[in-house]
Amino acid sequence: MRPELATSIAVGDTDPITREPMKDINPDFKPRLIKPSSKVLKSPSRRCREREKATGDILSFFGGLQYLGILVLS
View 1 (cartoon, rainbow, N blue to C red):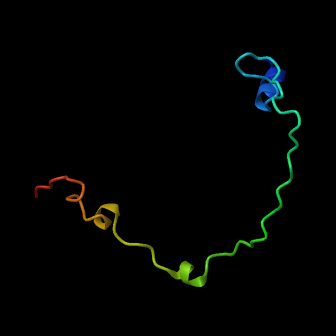
View 2 (tube, rainbow, N blue to C red):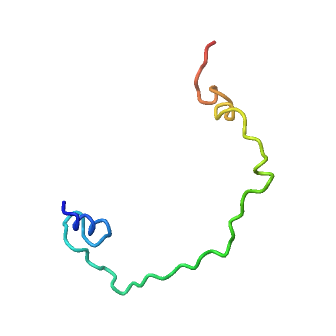
View 3 (cartoon, rainbow, N blue to C red):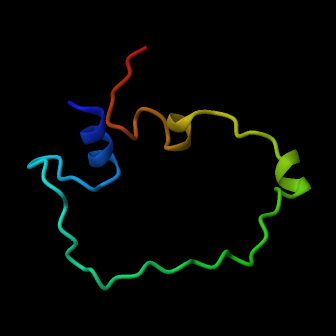
């Protein structure tokens, strides 16, 4: 594939199936700018950072292997 064709497909100017130029189905559409959010991202609170990691695994959380219907013979 020619590099020009690959670039044209990648940016959406050419149909990858027919390899013909894409038709503009909505020529009146004008993209608008999205205003950035006014919310400020905060770092996690000290309590969250100091919290210990959970102990155990997913099976113990759900009641062990019996919950999954698996019979364990010891």
